[in-house]
Length: 496
Image (cartoon, rainbow, N blue to C red):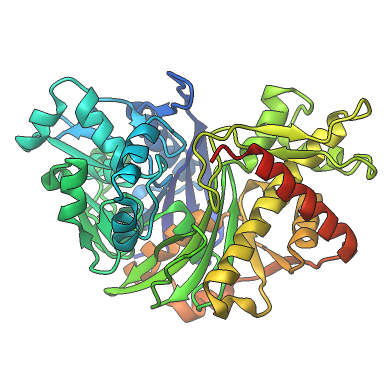
């Protein structure tokens, strides 16, 4: 037994493998981007085979960079883009269709049909979720309906379905294990978060055979062992959590009232509510934060579809920056006299609006508006959306009305300008940790603690360290005016 733990971080745009040593420090990293497929407007797909190849490649790369062998690794933890779903052949492991990505909106008509039938309260009560194309259930139903012969094959028990973690576990174990964890299951729209089981009534409504679905385990649990021929030795898979829950764990947000927000492609804020299932009255999601030793901890979650993707749009779409890291520098040059707002509804708006048909819009342009104003508007849109989530959380859970400190992670938090503007518009402190790889760290901790080579929860929480705290500096009148302008821009963008 060694202290080395490998985290597989399978994200929306790339796969990464990060090897941590016994001191929980990064020893080696492998990363590989993969293709984004957009077969129709609002549709987003990934090739599961390309994802699988990227995972194998990055694991080998991380081991090589650390000069480490698979036999030196005590355990593997997996974290993944959550609602993205795959259906594959039980006998061959071959997918029947591309993975449908969490950003995909093709099932909006089905969601609207179910809402019209008055079924949303039923889904929300059982799953904590809303009827939105974001979640996995309607994506599974779509594939069963649209892929020729899929439904009959599923009913005969020939097909399996799961989120990306399940697909990877199946492949890594050579088809021996079909499993997921409670956090990923809680994002499918067919998992009852109160009973911690697949909900057969919801499965019947969506016409999904229960036999397709994986066994649901704790986040730190036995998920099987990798095939020896993959990496040169068998390695136990002992931890699994969806990426946002893994980041919550990596940020050591173990106490009720603690909050983290991850700024990657999208932005996802989770507020730990402990054993309480808090039913949102402000269109937030109630979800499972983690399940350890059979005990479930819940969270309120706000999901923003576009955060870092707005910076990618600046770079790749309108080409006002050459590199993503230049966005903060450019935003700092913007004219303070101009109030330019970007509502980044490129794939609809998430919480608390949930408008699948809304599309991106820019307001307040003048002849003097240029790249700097566009950059500031893009970065401020992330802060404004986070403020909307925080306000909704405070309305839903009175315990959150105390002094909120937000722990942040993800690619965008490296930008000092962006984090200061976030603190200014939230009117709350923002804590940036020393280790920014919190998603991978969370998955690694689940596996490492289960293997007995990493510290238990309390000692892990003590190891969390602060890089910098950003405190609000913006004048209150300026903040109020900016928020008023933002809310007006959103109101003009909503279709509902």
